[in-house]
Amino acid sequence: MQNTGVLSVDSTKNLSIQNKGTVVANEVSIGALDRVENGGTLVADKFKSNGVLINRGNGQLVIGIVAKVSYLTKHLEVAKEMYDAGETLPEAVIEALKSAGMIPAEAGANEAALMMLSRDDRALPDEEDAIALADNEDEGEAPAADEPAETAESTDMSSSASETNAPVRTLEDLIRESRERAAREAARVHRTIPTTVGALTSAARGAASQTMASIESQAQAAVTGLWADAGYGKTEFDAYRTDRSGLLFGVQGSTETLTLGAVLSAGTGNVKSDNLASQDWNDVGGSVYGAYRFGPAALTASALYERHEGKAQGQKRHADVLGASAKVSVDAMLGSMTVTPYAGWRVIGVDHADAEDRVVVHEFPIGFRAKGSFDAGAWKLSPVVDAAFVPQTGDTKVRLAGTNTKSVISGGSAVTYRAGLSAEKGNLAFGLNYSGSTGDDGLQSYSVQANVRLAF
Image (cartoon, rainbow, N blue to C red):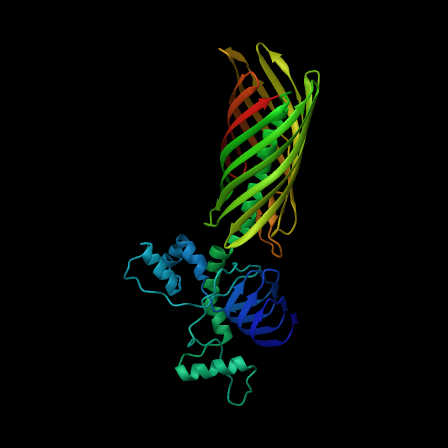
């Protein structure tokens, strides 16, 4: 629906609106597939959103809400920060803070207040009914006696003001009084949506890169059999802190010169950001890979697909990942040690459901691997170290759909390293590796992997 005049309704439910005029409603409800683009004035007592709200240009949004009770009671650290800053909070949130022992039991409850969102912002998904203003709070100035009322709602509001002797404030007064509060609220609470988009996109890209690196390592062995790799890692990057546990299960067949294999992957993790937004996610995927050996040289290639599904602010989000890699390596003997310089390329594309466009990142690992071997009784032990410099190009930020808000997802370069030990006896082999990286935008990561291989 497109509105360029004055629209007065009791409620709007599951309706997409382009507003360039004035909308006055007791309740605005946006469904998951709906979108409100406000370039005029939108006034509402209650606001519920599972879809998209965009406030454009000189749009003015006046809503009878301080915050979603369901959100703040589940994120009491945010509520405590607002309380300490003197923000107004619903009574239910105050009681939750008291129950958690975060404020004194005798602390008084704040009353609900008006809030106006900033431009190009997006409403939090609604999990429960929003908290409206008290009935005796007036939302508009009553028309003069010689002026006709514009809407039934404005007549009702002016009558309520007369009956309760509440002070009469104009729409301009409300906007002026709420502007400073709105800026703080928009920066603290509503920025969590673009942050979670960037966090999941960054985490998905990192997980895919780690999966391809593990596959490249397995493809080096000219072995026919089954293998599995389990790992846990932590990453700090820009404003994000990620924990992830993952499992790879692969099968491969090899000849003297050729290796072909397939992999199933699964993982679970959590990513937090500096603004206290947190989301859990799970991922599943599949990959195929191959290696061709010609003399001391080898060419390794892989292709990957992963689906990452996260939940933040009560709403599910997902990202689809496509990746491909190629690497050339050459073995050289240095005493009893095999030294292998290599150069490669990885491309990772992440398509987040809430992002404006797919982001594509290119990685170019350039490094070397050194591997030794010695016998320990019936076991053959092989220590290995690996180090690489990894320049990165392509998209470094992801943009939230319908806005100009962007979040960092990739830096310009990184240094990666790995140290490990494998033990082999007959058809069975075990391995343990520690790996890490450091790079631009505060990148620091480490992970531990254990693997097992059964040859046929």
